[in-house]
Length: 108
Length: 108
Image 1: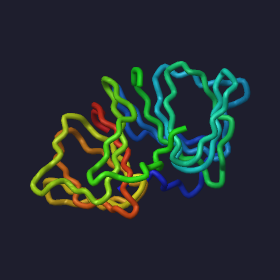
Image 2: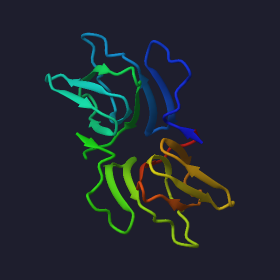
Image 3: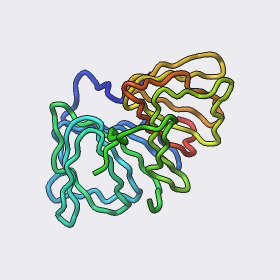
């Protein structure tokens, strides 16, 4: 049995992306952040829709319109393809554990 | 912000299925169980692959070969299409919160 909360004994000084499912229309990944943020001036601008949930830690996302979203464990959101966003803050104690699903999700 | 751990103030006496994403190739749902199990003699036999994680509670799944899998919070597994399975046990205190992704996931 694999547990999403099991972390490596030591975390690298960068975000850790682990593919859990990789298929034509769906990918699922675990992301572990411990303090990393999107570099200044950079944005995620993704070709696919993303559904993402924060399972551990605290984080802040920002959109290009200047709005910010603070996330606590269990908070989830849908990020349409090409909705520019960046990560402004991630906690390191505890590290952030994200579960992200990528694919074409149409309208919801 | 929507939180996966927010439960209705009272739970029905049956499993609660809530669609979070419903698209051509991907569906994501939250399932809340509080003691329900698959009826005796019945099996889930799904046309699509499923990736499922238990986020709260304790549960036991069983496969047609007689094997059982006990799940704790954070445990996740991949159930290929048409792999018959049933839910043998779900806790009610606390209720089980499942997050399930359905679609065609190919080999992993």
